[in-house]
Image (tube, rainbow, N blue to C red):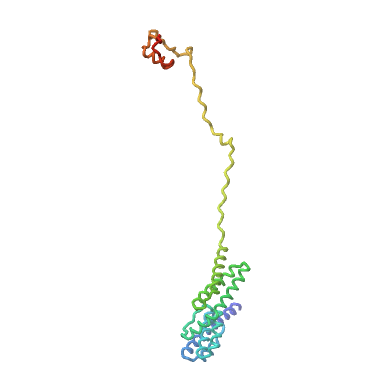
Length: 256
């Protein structure tokens, strides 16, 4: 039983959507045939339409009112459309309707931008950037549309700086902090005793001193025939040696 009821609801919704699409198609045909009153009446019958169908219904209602010369009502309907779809482009609009929509957009966008910014700031004041970011992005897009429509002034330029700043600030705060590198353990403290614990080279042994009594030691041999005494050296050599140690030799001194 529940399955049958659920299927009935799905079928009813599909039939309603199909009917809304059919009614929109009929209204477009009537508008193309210049039957503006009939098209307006057909659009009034559309209910429970999908978002895309509802958007087109609002547009064609404005088209019909403008074509009938009901300019004030057309502008009011255009403002209502602009408040819910501030960035939408018109489908199949005549140049006169395009100009009317542009005038409404130029007049309305500054207040819509400020309202969007206030909504974003309210979320930011609550420190809820994920909630405020979509409104900041929408405000940025609307600022670009206002500049394109010729609705730009210094106040909107300053507001654009704030919007960009809050977006960058919020995204920077949302980025995860870089992970800290693992701390390296400190090297163990080494005492002076540990540093000097390396093996040292042993001091060389003192040279051995031998005497004639040691085994294998031969005493030096003296040559008795070698000349010794003053006569063994020439006179000139003796004179030079004496001059070196006793000073100049005078002629009155006799060399021994």
